[in-house]
Image (cartoon, rainbow, N blue to C red; front, side):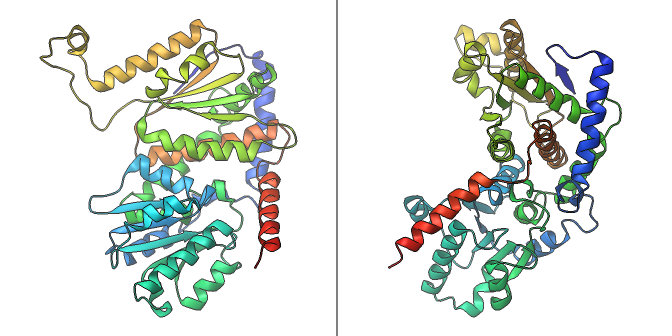
Length: 412
């Protein structure tokens, strides 16, 4: 479901723009070097992740090791979809030694095992964490010959230091497809393995993405959510709205916005162009950022996402002797959230702040899979409208190079 707020080009012009963008999008995602759009459709997708998850099903504590796209996607999935009772997942996604020290106090053998993710197999932060993990295992009396009982890795299918280590040490090793970039990799083994181990139905995740594929390729301009949204965002950019706010009304989707921020920023910010992503979530940010969104600079386009059906709800019936509590008594918590969302949309309209309304049926595996593919494809489509390559990240690579130069200069 989508609600539009704002003016659009005449129908014939809109149709022409839709067909042009759709053709460019299809041509792009069908390239051999771009695999994210086809992966959910590939026969056997998720099989290796599920098989490996069963091998480690007896463990109770998974430490997921990665940075950027190797961590944000998996963390988003588990925040949204949960971890089954009796299991715990911890994300080691930075190199802050103070934070790591706190995390390590929670590691205990034999229940803890580690999932180390790096597409290149050479990511400095990830390899640093692996060095610390293997030293910790040795300090607990676990020899290199037994690391395979405590380590799973995910990396390029053929090359890189991590792949070589996996072969040398006989570790379980999953693949980051060579034609899928890290920030587009959540629906590969990168995210599917921790999801499967945590009890998420990964078949439903992939089904959601596969179902969305057809909708995103719709020939009818009025029915194609992808091209209409991308063209709307581009129209707002030409008005000077260079910031994109994604605001789901769901705490379960809060980390979804963190995943989207990397996807949007790293894909679209280059060549002096770009759209700055802003993460928010309701109703919490109605009491903070919404003041800026509502009456600050006219430089933001709002993507407002609500959830139609909640898995649980709570009656607000009460016996409190307080007018505010009595006013809420006839309603449920879900209805209050609906009221907050509707009120925000009306206020945005009053302030002439442009938004798109997106509605997810519910927060389940199939819906999350569809949302992932939709926002990945939207990122690509907007990149095409900006006439940039949404799949590279030269600014990030420059920082990595200078970090390596520093290590070389300071090598003892």
